[in-house]
Length: 199
Image (cartoon, rainbow, N blue to C red; front, side, top):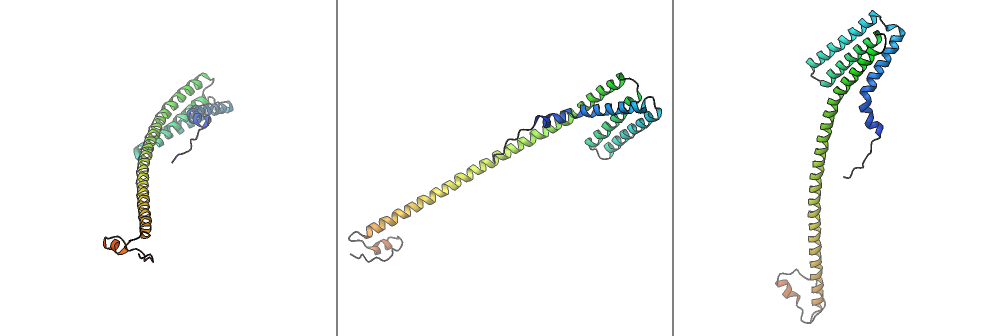
C-alpha cells in the first residue's frame, strides 16, 4: 500500500523540455553541413526539399481527414516544417536567414509541445486524483474490515472466557457438599460428565 518514493534524475526531467530545441538545432546543423557540401544556391536541392515538405503537408492533411489522430497530424506537419527549414537553411548563403528560421521553428516547436505537455499534465493529475480516491476508498474498506474482524475476535474471546469461567464454576461447585448434577440438567444447562463425587 505504501509505494516507495522515486526521485527522478534532473536529466530525465529536463530532457523532454529540451527536445524541441535539440531537434531544431540538429536540423540547422545538418542543413549548414549540407550547405557547405554543395547545397548552397542549388535549385535542384531546393526543389527536392520543397517537394518533400509539400508531401509531408499533404500527408498531414490526409491523416487528419482520414484518422483524426492529432499526434499523427502534428508529426506530419512538424516533418514538413523541418524539411522546409532544412531546404532554406541549406540553400541560403550566410547565417542570418537560417538563424531567423531556427528561432521561429524552435518557438513553434515549443508552442506545439506545450499543448501536449499541458494535456499530459492534466491526464497525469486526473490519474493521480483518481488513484488517491481509490486508495482512500480501499483504506476505508480495510479499516472497516479490520474493526469487524477485531470485534468478532473480541466476541469470541468473551464467549470463550465465559465458557471457561462457567466450567470452572461447575467444577468448583461439584466439589461442594450437596451438589446435584440432575438439578442443573433440568434447569437447562448442558449435561455434565459423570463424577464420582456423589454426596
